[in-house]
Image 1 (tube, rainbow, N blue to C red):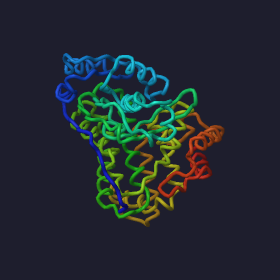
Image 2: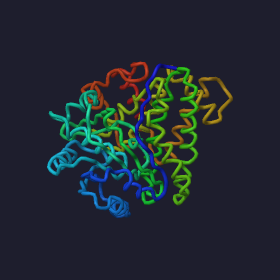
Image 3: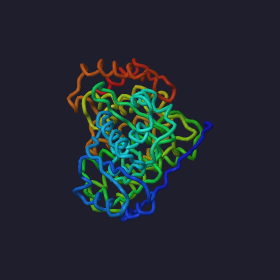
Image 4: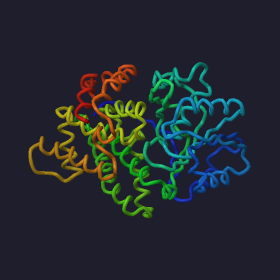
Length: 385
């Protein structure tokens, strides 16, 4: 196992009806900005519950954070915070709203152009406004990590940042709030969480027995319950387990002390930035091809996944590993997520612009061994057609 430092200060408040706990969690004298997305939290009553729980606290609302939150929109929120003297941010929504709120939290005290810290992936972010979250869509794990992903439309750039200053102070997870989600969003969230696990698990063996078993449990849970939540949309127990699995998939625990990849995310972000494809689907378009192209470095862990998660015990290590890729594709397709670029109307002409974007954003040595060069990324995209 590799040396590591694990830190996660976010308080998780989990369960049905827990939005009322905002009265305990938000400082009594706070001046709050509630940040939301397209309005679903207003239609389904979640925002009304938040308002009631905030009670007599001074608060205002910022609406309109997009599914891929944009720098341009978020800078409007930054201006509102500065104008109104806000000192506490409350994100109510899915991962995009949470990511956007973290960006606002870091941007408000930043003295220069906030895009500067995006280019540096948050390395120099030392202070931020406190953030609380009410999660309505399990997927990104943003409710319990320090990371955000932001798009700048004018540059066609989608970058991530991370800083210890942007961990949420608390996050409320009420699985009942996911009942009104469209099926596509539910499926995307499950797949997103699944790929978060594989980016930390399907690397090379590192003696992280505890981390491997945690990861395998999460993969098993998501593969078992993903189809069930689509077949049994009113099953609260299933939704609760999926919500918790998505949080654990990216709160730092399973990635501590083991190699991490994130090559599929590197390419996937560029696909979304250039073509507007859902984040989760950008990942399923890329991951199977990445595992094939980088098969030799992934072989042992793929075979381990085949045995421990999929129950495949017969055959050679290579045959088990390839069976794991096939079963993964089957799972993605069962969740309505395509595994070929051509299924989304992309052909070979889409590859050079994607490679130029990767180069412009410094994504030229990705993967657990830094071996995913631009030429390897080209091979991955060609294999994904």
